[in-house]
Length: 257
Image 1 (tube, helix red, strand yellow):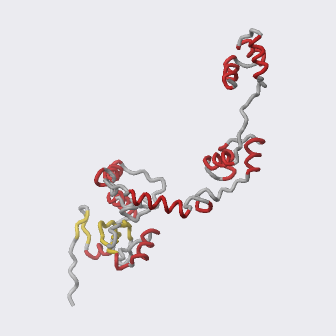
Image 2 (spheres, rainbow, N blue to C red):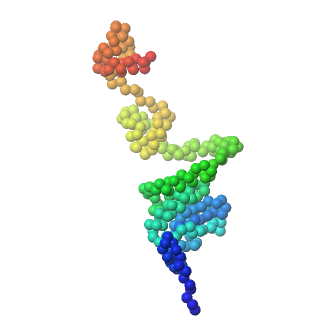
């Protein structure tokens, strides 16, 4: 039996045999034939049955069935570093992290922690979302769709009770009163204690009508100040009596009308 013919393949001015090529690491594109959405991934073993391991693509395959997906090799690599770099490039070029057209969750590579995109990648990503390239270009929800969504939200109480994203932050009024009024903690400090956002604390303060009285460390008394004013004292002289500036006296008078 004659040996199979091996045809050299040129990749970036480097020649590989057909056998080498079959063992190469590859960047692939998985396409959903039902809705056209794509997934870009890397495969170090070039397994033709491997369609992707991302959470969203796996969920889509389970929903639509494996037969409704195709896989094509878009580039081959000979090192893990090259594989990571080219995966990031193709994800950016094809904009597959855009949930309307793709299934990718991250920008590729090793999870992309701390990744800084090159200027070229940024340019490509920007072009992919400009004008007619944007999948939502020229589209607008119909009044019927808006009305239907609004009705569903009101009917099902989408943002009420347990459906509200901040529902888990059940902050007792007594604790909030103690921290905010008695211990004089800031909103940021209270948010850190309950491990929530400042907005959650502000919303609860308004809900319980917890209001911190304005500071009056100089013990200003509007009735006394009025009497001193009637006696002909200036705001500078009144400030000297209280040990504060005339600007503070002026502000206090304006606050009390």
